[in-house]
Image (cartoon, rainbow, N blue to C red; front, side, top):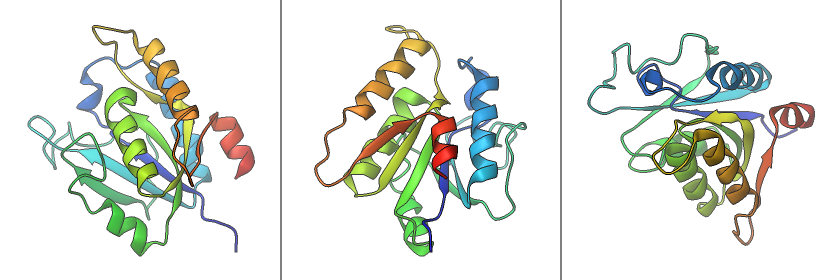
Length: 173
């Protein structure tokens, strides 16, 4: 049986996008392409003051597709593994490999990728399906390219972190 095509979508929520994020339309279009091709989708949603569960701010962006069998994990830290049931969800569904995309490249996406890689999960980053905001030290475009480069060259013996375009991921699937 071929491996499941699993997609993890991080923090693509209304309240997160109250601060301007770069290339929202292109990013959500690519994420939807991945959602439609995936066998299983895991939505990671952040909660904190202003992003409380059950509020419009906590909800996923309206333009994102939501498969009826999608899985949902709520987090309170940048890292989606930190004090959440994410690892239990992955184990229960026998998932050890997945594609990662979402918001914010330099915080939640990065922290989750690094923790997941250290736990032995095989991950592929959709290099053109994650976004962030301009920061005081760097523009969003620079941060996105910087983190794609960091992940491409991330050293973790016994595990490979891949960084590919959405088109290449879809072709592989």
